[in-house]
Length: 548
Image (tube, rainbow, N blue to C red; front, side, top):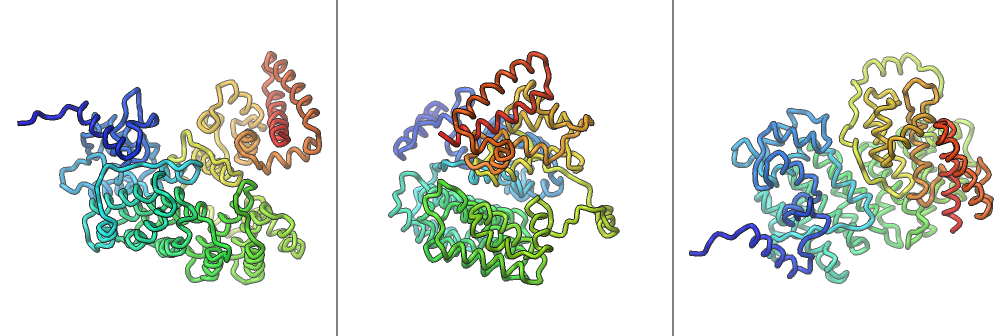
């Protein structure tokens, strides 16, 4: 009789299998206090924070959680405003054996069921430059076998999830060459499309993650199939299953971000057709968002492929048609598209903007400033007052609190900063307290206590302990000088201060002078003066970097 394998022998077997698959025995990122996590559990979780909180409450990654412990894990993951009934429903759905407890893999699924918009994994997919691949130890499976499992109606939940992990491993693996990847994508597309249409929201979520992984890892290889996946995403926008709807919205953004359009702009033309669907608001909104994603890509000076002439003319016509129509919702969305169009190609955008009448010019300025086109800046009328009275109590999205990796794209970073600010805005009044501001600065910019005090001294202009959103965003964008190559805010500040036209030597002389002034003011604890000096140093550093 063979003796029972020790944990050391099991780890050796896993390491051996990883080596045969061309992987390291254990990734450095998998380690916690010198101990590597089981690679299969990492593949299931995709983020080690799931393993950490589960292990903390269950005592072991092979243990289980009761409902109260599950709720504690939600809090540890930063999910504080979840609905208890929704959490109970998710817990029960994943408790397949009716034992009132969850093991690790069901726990990971249940977290997303309890809070469908939990975006921890999507942030990594959408913001990290390098694709992170998670190999599974499951299998082996044949290609036809995988497609059959995914297309099977009413099939096993476990089998479908396993098949999706294997498909993602096969196609998105760094070891899969482009030729093989293209063939696999064609072969697997019917199965993946069926998984996206699965009535089980948890299967849809995993299918969305798998397709997003393939899009990020193989990019242009997905081009022939991307329209099929986008069409399914748009169908799911109106799904009654909140998890499926949210996952589909994130997948559509990932597809448009990572998969390049062809020379005939087929995907763009499909998006433009979708903007005409007035009776399907969610689809229309998604299509306008897709056009905005393409414009953000077009504005990237490092992009390997620049848009052709037809791209610009198609977007221009879409904006003009929308602004000349009677649909106010479409007008608002077209103005938002135009803001990005101007950033990507100001000369072509000028052809639209210069034709505006007084009313259109005012509406565009409102949208450009971050508001609605009908904002008048005056006192609220009775309708707005009634709307304020009927508005539901403010509930900040606390899941967006805490450290997060901010995008290097200017517009995305600005949106992330605004989202994070709202998460720290306890009352929804458009400002945060100095205490919350310290947390914001520490979490997003890793500020020391003294650095935070200096920032708060300059941000709290009314000395009432309130930091407004516009001032906080300006500070955040200014201190992104090193991370964002094309920083529209600092470009504007450089023009105002006269730095943009200065030679590099003159900029460096100014920077040295301000650094000496900082030392003097710091010795005197003159934080108000330090705030202004620090701002100028950000602008100078940005332009010095630009001139390298």
